[in-house]
Image (tube, rainbow, N blue to C red; front, side):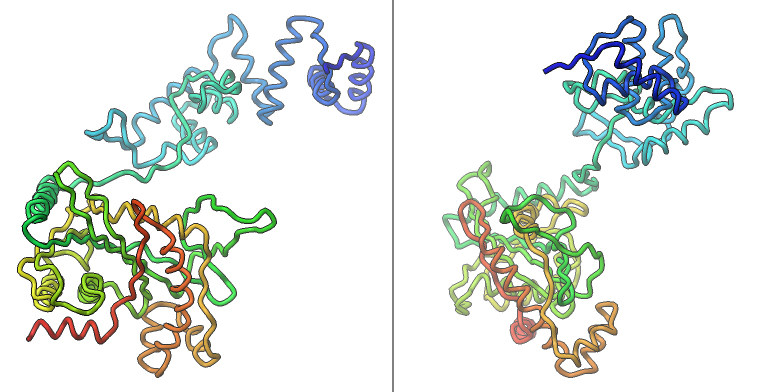
Length: 456
């Protein structure tokens, strides 16, 4: 219910406070209204206008804005017009902008200012000494409102075309071979459709996700940098350490066996997804292990004679998939000879265009599982823990493993529980109602078998 107070009550409050502190009566009047909930109408129209401005300063927590509000008085010139013009020049000329051919707006790669105080400071440097400078809050009110339908938007003037914005991660760098590589991908899909009825065919896409940090025993680390909301019990707290350094990590490797559609306009984003988990230290992502893992996916029963004779591959341009590298060519020849294929076609994306690879879309699905877990390894024996503690980099751990027998196996056993946990989480995910399948990283024996097929 509205509350109304007599003028005598307000007068006593103002007089009592005014004797103790040197505060303007208009300030005390507004403070009395806000604290007591007085909804009485102002005695004069001018008092009402003054009260509204003081309330705005109270909400903005900026007393200097009172001086800026005087510029709204009728007949008073625009006091900060020079500063606003300098601000517009700064925004247009300082920031590098380009026009993207696929968009109607401008893309910028550098923010105009770090903050409002920074913007105020940078523009003030370009102004003369006698140029009036507004307060920070008054400068904020010159921005375009974030939500024009909100009640707070009525305080924004929109004199400056500025807005707050979180950096978007959708920018893609162009390359001169984009059209050529896109055409190759289309030809590859057309070939798949043509061979679908006349020959056995498997289309495979492979890609590595960024490494997931694994914390030390008793110190779980977040698996992803940017998290999202997940479900937990009402009396639980989901937490992990915020350290940005980890000695060990796990790399999910994604392989997608595509279901070939009937026509070229059909979806090539359907099929079976396979996820492998690798130790970033001793199970490196290189061409030969990738081909050994692909060979296990194509023939899980070990019967290589039953593999379909035609294999088409589409990968990104990473060093372990770049088809113009001799190491990748050698691994493809090994796979061709080991599986006794009739045809093998390997196509890669253009540089900086890995987003075209279908498994890149799988990464967002994997993030659903990684957002709900903090990773830490199992504690090893005291002897091995002491050796790992003195290592700061992956090269240090590899060098220590070469000197001390059993350290590599101990590290693998320490990370096995992490792999099992991630494998269980990824196995609960699905694409088009097909559950993800988990495969083990290639062993040394499987890699040697594949490599030996090169010389057979």
